[in-house]
Structure formats: structure tokens, C-alpha cells
Image (cartoon, rainbow, N blue to C red; front, side, top):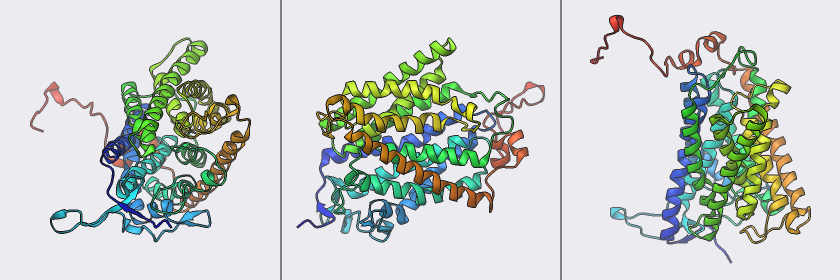
Amino acid sequence: MNTFPTMDAPDGANTAWMLAAFALVLLMTPALGLFYGGMVRSMSVLNMMMMCLSAVPIVWIVWVVVGYSMAFGPDIGGVIGDPTTFAGLRTLFGHFGAGGADTAAMPLVGTIPALLFVAFQAGFAMVTVALIAGAVADRMKFASWLIFATLWAILVYVPVAHWVFSAPGLTAEDGGWIVTHLKAIDFAGGTVVEINSGASALVVAVLLGRRAGWPKDPMRPHNLPFVMLGAGLLWFGWFGFNAGSTLAADGAAALVAANTLGAGAVSMVAWLVIERIRHGRPTSFGAASGVVAGLVAITPSCSSVTPIGALAIGAVAGAVSSYAIELKFRWGYDDSLDVVGVHFVSGVVGMLMIGLVASSSAPAGVDGLFYGGGLDQMWRQAVAVVVVLAYAMAVTAIIGLALKYTVGLRADRQHEMDGIDDGQHAESAYDFHQPRGGRVDVGR
């Protein structure tokens, strides 16, 4: 009879790899701040970076107190984890005696220390919360954002994470109901991270309304090198995000890493080809967006496809998302930085294409339609997408409406016109002031 949690000595190689993967995942949130920060106007860059970076302390506090336990604790009715089992992360860090030496085997998730898994998964939650900020650029009150991010992490992210992810060795469950009962495949968070944040971003963008002057006034990215650097750092971090989800330094991690590289690369190419055909020029902005679209799409599918399948997924994601970002102009919703067009759309592409190009030769061991598996896996993937989409939109709408009619969501209009950096933070990213006479006082 199994007892939980599993107590043993951790595997050194796997632990070392997961420490690196955790650091890579944590890097993704400030990298997203740089990526988004370059996309906005110069008078909004600090606010955008603050919204992204604030997700780190918000999520970690929630995670330690109750969030991790609700996401990964013993299942209650298939809906949520027991909030008391790991509250405060008690029982998860082992026991240390005099001098700080280990005096007993520690709780493990797989073969790594449970507390390392806790921190690794917190990084997922952090970047997911931060992703939503891209849809509300230039116009949301910072204080309201902090409240929204806290409530959203608890009420939206945590339940969906419980439906999909698992902590092998800590509880008897081997994945939430989407994985164990529906048998959909979502290796590293296509539903939990991408569809969840993209659907929620659409709701909040609609509740906030359009930016002042949009779409008539040009609102061009103020710093494309920031965008390119942010995309590069996100790509770097994504290897920890995807390959780290194997929880081991093994062959499966190697395949996942190769698929992550391939999907991001070919998606960039696909986006640029579409840009060249439609608009006559390939752009750096398109290159960065294409990379991210491919990485989003491979997130759920990286354990279920071959490297050729990864290329197919990346190509479709890059091409489809390059069209999808323009839907906001046709339908009139102001998704400032294309969270819906890139993260939601590519997340759906990645989930559904598992039903087409999954191969039983990959670690997930399932064949899609093109490998003789029929449509069985496709309908499972589609149901997972629809359920998470509906839940995220419904609960986000409740949170957003509650805040809108209490503390308010939108910043003062004058702050929007003058620059939300100054209005919300009393700061400016760039000081263009020249002292009288052109002399610079180096002592100040």
C-alpha cells in the first residue's frame, strides 16, 4: 500500500537540473515585462513592467499560504485540492537537525525535493498572471491590478491547475480530471497557462474598454530592441518551462527541449513569410511575436509529438496567430499587446493539433489522426479547451465586474493622456530633461 508523501533521498542529477529549470521559469516573468515593456509607448513602460514583476510577490505569497495546497493537495470532488494539507508549505521541506544537517529523508515529488517542485510550479503561476497585463496596457489602475491578480490567481489559476497537473508522490492523484478522466494531453500548461490567461485577458480588456484614442491614434512599440531581447529571454526560459516539466534529466527532457526549439524556430519563419506576403516586409516585431506563438503552441504538445510534429505545430501557430492579432480591429476589442491573438489562439492550436500529429513514439504514447489514431484524442482535447475557456471567462468576468463597481478598474483619464507611468507611479522611464546651458551636474 502506498503512503503519501513519498519520503526518500532526492536524486542529485534530477535535483540539479530542476534547480536550473526553476531559475529559467522564474526568469520568464521579468522577461515578459521586457517583452511587453518594449511594445507599449514610452510613457507606459514602467507601469507595464511593474504589472508583470508584481506577479512574482503576489503569487508567491498566495502560493505559500494556501495556493499550492489548493492546486496540488488531495482532491476534493474533482474541483479543488484540500487547502489545509500543505497550507504554509508545512511538511514539504523535510527535517533539519543541529547544524542544518538532514536528519531524515525528505518529501519527494518524483525524485526531487517537494519544495523545489513547489517553487517550480509557482513560476508557472507567476508568468500566467503576468500575461494578462498585456491586454490592459495603458489604462488599468495599478492598485486594482494588484487586487485582480491576487483574486485571479486564487479563483481561476489554482482550480484549473488542479484539473490538469499533479505532484507524483505527494498525493494519490496522478493528474487532475482533465488528464486522468477526460484523458486530454496538456503537458506543460496549454490550458492552465495559455488558454486560461488569454480568455481572461479578453474579458478584462472588454470590461476596461478601449484605450483613449484607439484604434485611430498610432500606438507603436516604443522600443523594439526590448521586444526582441524579451522574446529571446522568454525562449531561453521556456526550455525550463517545458523540459523541466519532465522533472528529470532524461531522454524525455531532451525530446521536449528539441521540440521547444523547433516549434519556436519554424513559427518565427511562418510569421515572417505571412508578413512578407501580406504587408511586403518581414519585421522584427513579427519575428518576436512568431517565436512566442510557436512556444505557446508547443507547451501542451511537447511530450506527445516528434520533432517533425513540433515543426508542423509551430508553422500553423505562427501563420494563424499572424492573422488572429488583426481580429481586434474587426471586432472592436482593445487587446493592447495581443494576448488573445498570440497566447489564446496559439494555445488552442497547440492543444488541438495534438489530436492530429501526436505520435505514440513520443513519451505521451498517443497517436493522433495523422498517425492512425482517429479522432479519439481530438475530441478530448477540444473538450478540455472549451471547459477551461468557459470557466476562465465566467470567473474572470465576476472578478472584473466586482472590482469595476467597487474600487474601479480604469485609471483616471488624465493619467492616460499624460502617461500612466507618471499618473500611477510618479516616475518616467526616460529623462530627456537638459539642465540650462547644457551643463550636466554629475554630482546630482
